Length: 255
Image (tube, rainbow, N blue to C red; front, side, top):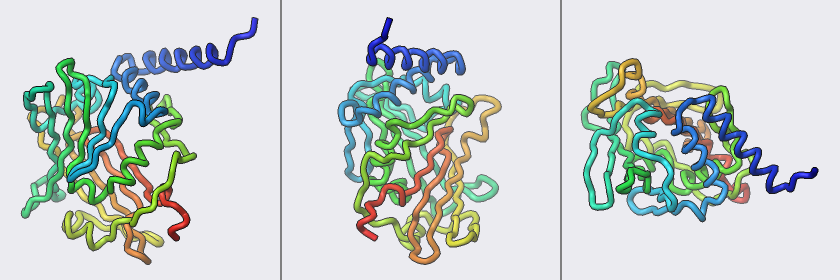
């Protein structure tokens, strides 16, 4: 008996879902995988709105508010009741090596909006965050999640090397970034690049025991020594690991 291609595909998906559930023992990994599948049809399931901030809207919400607590073991800085449901805000404040807030204060936020069923409907990033992750690069990096491979041991996604599109945009200059973020905690001098390291502490009212380290977020910014452009941003934000190599998304024609 020969199975139809469509059936084979469905069986593979069911197999992967079963594997993820077995590995994690938690349903939030299964829901996270559902969002991953939605990324394959980005414009059907998501909408991007850019104003002062950057917002990713979820047209068919899947994730619950509890999923984010399960993932990071952290709670938001603010939890507000709104007409449509609830709004969470995570505040990240720049700190020194002793976790003391630096004055004048440098901070950014991420907002999560949930409907009355407690499902995520929108995820926003503040203007300061966009200084190190410009909107065009942030959107195309999200789109590149489609087709990403799954590392079942590390439970991580490896972005698709065949990018869905390229963009024409200027990379942020070091002087402009430093004007917003101020002096870094540390500078690493490497071949052809300088890596500026910043620490941001999440303001939260509760951290589950054993996960205190998740509240401290290290951001690494890599600048090209020749043209002083920011070409890579890597960080850990409330348990969410982010790494974007901006050069991969640039239209080669602009060089």
